[in-house]
Length: 633
Image 1 (cartoon, rainbow, N blue to C red):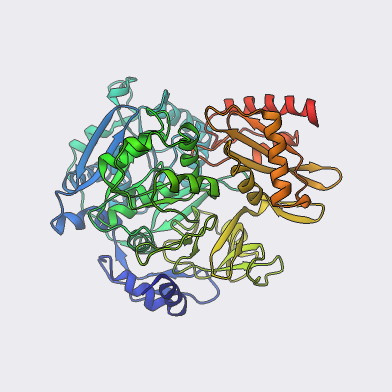
Image 2 (cartoon, rainbow, N blue to C red; image 1 turned 90 degrees about the vertical axis):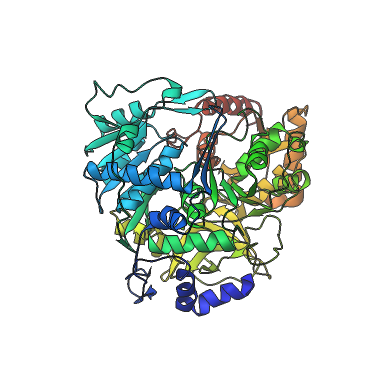
């Protein structure tokens, strides 16, 4: 069955299709209710099944005789350490840490926050929670105490599992001090703080004189292993917070059953990875990609997964990704386009790539934000393997648009996120809710039910879930993104709906303009935002970062960029301004903070985003903007 046939089958015969996929994982109690959909309530999958996600990710493989296979490779260029854990070793660590949590009183139905760096102990903690039926919420370690406190009060954890500190290139992140500060801010008070002492980094934890702390290692080594607790398919595996328009984060809830089925299906069919092979998602476990494809997906599929503590550049150079691929024989990799752009900026001629043997790598997957054509072309030229852009959200937990190299030879269309993935009946709607013909831009929506593994709702806030995702187009999930579909069914995601600007009554995609700017030979990365204009309502403004070593004259380059957009998009774009900067403000996961840039250009008040990677970029950018405005605006 090719990808197109598989998709059609998944829409026409949903229950039969997903029942067959559910047969590919091991259940404690096999589901008989495949889809529950009364047309009134939100549809659910495998409601009467019972299973345990930790069992599928660890115990099953040991039971099947694969205990000696490597489960996790911990590769940390920031500490110059590489450790490997077999599935048998992994089982011992996870089951004993689960026993320790059980000894502290954690049980099925409780919640726990995990606030840790990219180290193996973070994965032990996630799987130990899953083993007991404890719903975990991994909070990205870059979040400040105030943001952590908000999450503590939202999910009321019985325990917080953390580490003494983390390393990020040249700076240390004080995890444990942040946790203590967050607890002083939160109304809810967790019963336990379990801290892993990273002795290597100094800042030792004084367990003797701080009775509020539990020693992670001691708890693990001195506890009896705990067995897997059977949980209902709909029991929440985890809560993962994503940013909300109100400023209050939304706790996306993921089930156990549908999630496990989706992970197994996607590893085989979307990523084309066979059991026993090495797969690498270069993402922090605090993000959706880290949950799905650094941890659960590859482990459920019996792959070797890499937990990478480092950055694409600076640890030690822009060749670190290629070194990891060569050393660990990675067959497929998943990262954000911004990581590839960062490498391209530092090594535009691909000199560092030539130092490494990348023959094991079959496919590169990109997601997180739209990938520009210039970056895709650079990757194809210098790395020489297919770079497949695909689209999904924290809410879905896995790809909704993509290609399927596990099923067929794929045909890539540059700038497209691919075709709808089985289970996701994607439409492009007008504002009035009518389906648009090909080549017309509209709202990207998905007919209910969503595929297994997509969000169950928002933790503790069903009304917000309905209003935010289901109310705009009844019977459909509203993604918040705009898109265009072509005559072959390929979808081109144009970005968040609020990234479409209205220039004198014309709705124009800033994403299209970014494609044009990014194609300039001197540009490493860029963004285009709409700024307020008295005459036209909004006009586009481009900001570009140049490639390392570029000698381009900024004033000439700015004119070239403006001319390019007018040539490729047309005078209707009304592009008049382009600014060259050293860096763009980004989130810790690498997404460009377009809303912040737009607010700054409009000289409106803004709050420093909690997700920002480096606040100093904002001050730098403000100086550049002020200087530019004095000269030209």
